[in-house]
Amino acid sequence: MDIAEINEEIRIEDFLASEGYQPDKIRKAGKELWYCSPLRNEETSSFKVDTSVNVWFDYGTGEGGRIFDLCKRLKNLSAKEAVYFFNREYNGNISTPQQREKHLKEIEKYKDDNAGEIIKEIKPIGNPKLLEYLKERKIDIEIANRYLSEIHYMLNGKNYYALGFKCDDAGYELRSPISKRNINGKNISTINNGSNSVKVFEGFFDFLSYATEHKTEYKNYDYIVLNTSAFVEGMLNDLAYKNVNQMYLKLLKYERIDTYFDNDNTGKKITNSFQEMFKGSNDFSLLYQQYNDYNEFATKGRVENLFSPDESKIIPKYIERSSLQEEQNEVNKLQQKR
Image 1 (tube, rainbow, N blue to C red):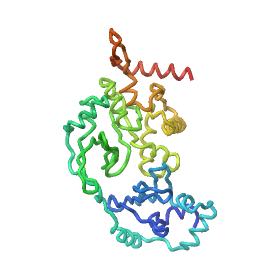
Image 2: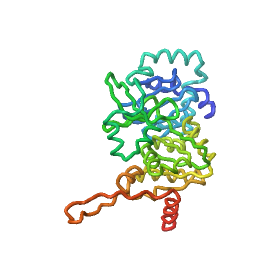
Image 3: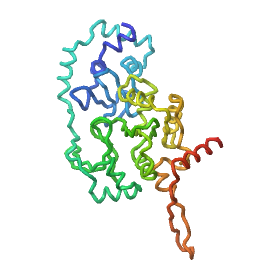
Image 4: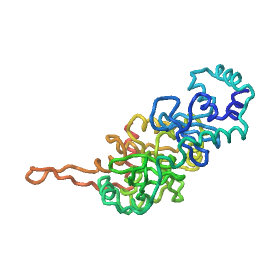
């Protein structure tokens, strides 16, 4: 077998089972298998195998690819050594559909789709603590009600509630004053307004802050919220990964791409990646380069501290947001200074 045949014919779940790894969760009728990563130590499973296209993705590192890549990483082999390994170990013993079905039945004794986490109720936002949380993050309640829901869910037998932002499939990004997690699977979130320009954010609070500050203008653009930087890192590693490939194809149709990523090392890395992959990509993180992200900029950067007349206390004054055109002009000036 050559590399192409190995990637096509040998199942990742079979390879992992032969190495002693079993999934913690089985989702979407066996199409998604979740493992504690075989490439590093972790207690919560964040390593996904998509059995429908036979690819893997590690959300903890942003790495992903085909079975040949995984074997090299896991066993620390060169390409030549990995080819030799598969031909020696498998020697034509390729998994048949019947063998794969038997394997899935065997691992059904492990946790299934709903083990550990169940969405119990989805409703409009009404919880006072969640409303106060939105107020603290300076999110307009009309904007919040348009894009968020109040999610009540069970996790390991205990009941919780949070704000939920819908992903492109069945998953939700969940946020509350005490919790930050995902339920039912990570994916990007797309908001289509029929524009040929798109604005891309790392997290949904950054998008909500932007929509709040540009309430009368923001619908002139489409939006993509990554929900994790790992999708971009994975896009660089292997475009065959389904969710990443979907995002890449969506972005290709736009004439203009504006990115609003975080000002940490990861954010700068994916900003550079976008500019390398997409010619129409513009870096808007220059607007808030003194802050970590757009939401922090919106909640802190737009406040000017003024002394009271007797200078006995500081009075915060909110500075009105500039228009989209003024924002663009500001970015152009900052780019010229680079």
